[in-house]
View 1 (cartoon, rainbow, N blue to C red):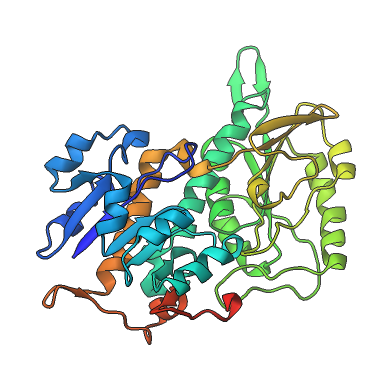
View 2 (cartoon, rainbow, N blue to C red; view 1 turned 90 degrees about the horizontal axis):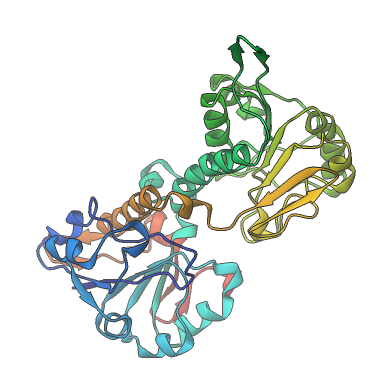
Length: 373
């Protein structure tokens, strides 16, 4: 069985789905042949020679597409590339399914199997395969570092002969995986941290990290069975913006993390809130790529309004590409090995298993997820 690993199409994405510390999990197994696209590790300063020494084989992109049984991908293939695949080839990847519905239908028409890593369920057994969490964790860390580098003061309190320097006040909106890491990073840097989430159940997690949980009564909110915050009504969003504006006004750095899978990000900070913030303060919009939480945020630009810096960076995990690649490659490999039978040297397409049932969007010419039929 041949597994191929492709480079991302976007040059800003420096991550690699193959990593020297993880590839042995595959290359050590009998019956598996691992190939990679030339230069796949360039973004993490890993040469082809390093991967060859670990029993992987360099090939052109077209050779991998034409010859592989399983292909790890970080974005969708072009129409021409899809036509070059063997019928029955299985793609395992990050495919932004809601933005690429035509690609899903093309896979079905060409009988190409498609596993979307974004649809791996949030259950205990699948945590080691959860690409959204592994990358959000690193993104939360990067967001704090980027925001602090654009702030005009230091973050920790310092006692100096020239006087006491007060700690920066950081406000995190959204306490998912990214938000929790942002809280932890800001605390490690010495900031005074406050956080808010629509799910009151996360208050204990916020406090365990040494931050203060901001309570805003929005009525019935809760979370989905996957642990994500439920989408708010327009009335609830308006109330949230109104009450959290007071916290933003006293904060030096505000980081927004709220995203909705398959839908545009909710607008959490409006122009009125920005007008009441202190000149020199920073807002970091982690959802800028999916529509943005902040009025006026622009992808990969720093916009200044009323003296407030509004930041929105793309590909945050690629700011720490080595660790992002390590986590990402582990996620992919763990999913593959979960269903690989070493005795028969075959992949078990057990669609009754909760993980494959959820993540396998296309199998044997059939679109299995109702959202894409």
